[in-house]
Image (cartoon, rainbow, N blue to C red; front, side):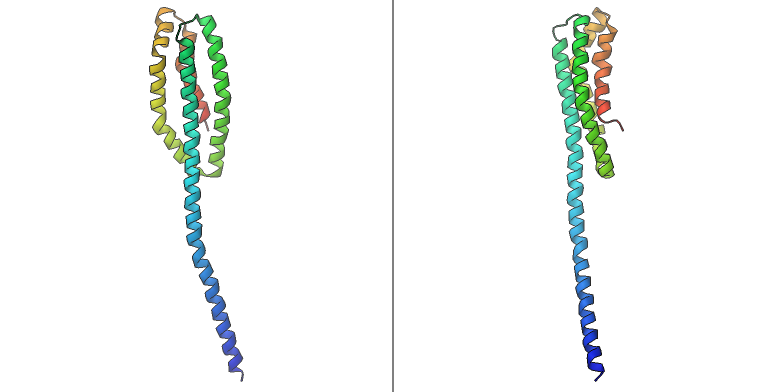
Length: 166
């Protein structure tokens, strides 16, 4: 008589054990798929931030080239460049905040974004050099305006660096 309730109890405990193990077996697969999706989304977010940084830099370079195109006097050009760089600096500071937030959220996505920046930065700086080379040469060799040359060659690149400083 005592054996029948023990058998029922044993069967129930085995069923509960298998039910509990079955649920756990499904969760790692679902968690792995969810983690992979989240990692891909984080990497995409990092690449998107870097693309926005590079686009803002390219836009600033194009505007600086447009300002220097007609070769105005340094006294006219410097305040225009300072205003342009200040406006772009605000954008870059906002992008830097997003960049640092990515570091706090997902270090691996942050490192991937850093790698993406390392791979793409030289092309954009080279494009800057190509776009501004005539203006830099004019203000350096013909006018001797080192302040303008510094603004067009060094300070504009600092904007790019400010967007990804850590």
